Image (tube, rainbow, N blue to C red; front, top):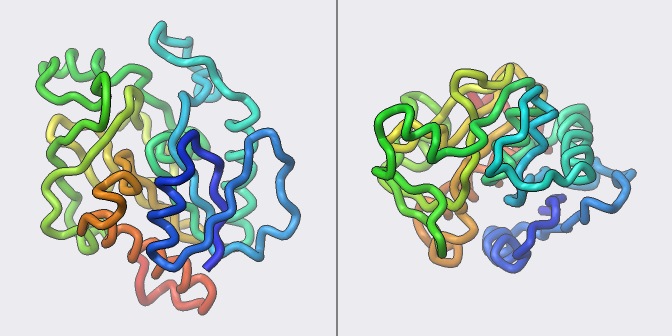
Length: 238
């Protein structure tokens, strides 16, 4: 299988994880033009990275929000539109889930520690430690494909300070998982021409992709991509 992926800062983790699942990734630099033959790819993967420009969802920039990369924001939104037009799945990781929410008209929490504090959680749940990844509990919405695929998973990793705003979820998206403190950890697409699935955590960094949760997620993503090629989506996608 051949997937197009937006180029992350650390490409090796994604490449190793995807190749372990029989996927050949082609990484696209944000400064490049939109490729022509997108139907040659089985799926689009939006990787992790910097903060999405808050101007795209009508918000003022928070002091903790990083300098936006307008080239990447624009290119990824174009890629989402094009891949859905040709009926290919779109998957997101970390920044990817955030960009998808914005692309579908939603908004973001610009600084998760502030949001957790307003909910009375304070420092009880860290999502962006000074080094490495955080580990925290996760709970899945019943009846979702993700809940079925990752049954038994109790914790995931993460490293982010922004997140999907659950009060301003993008149209055609539904929450599939939350952290213990209520941070949106996964979304799934609804009533779209192709599957959309995104997670806030980093499966590509979970024990070099060998952890059961990382493997299960990759298998689900592969099955969805294969189904679009065989026009067999109704059998596997809710």
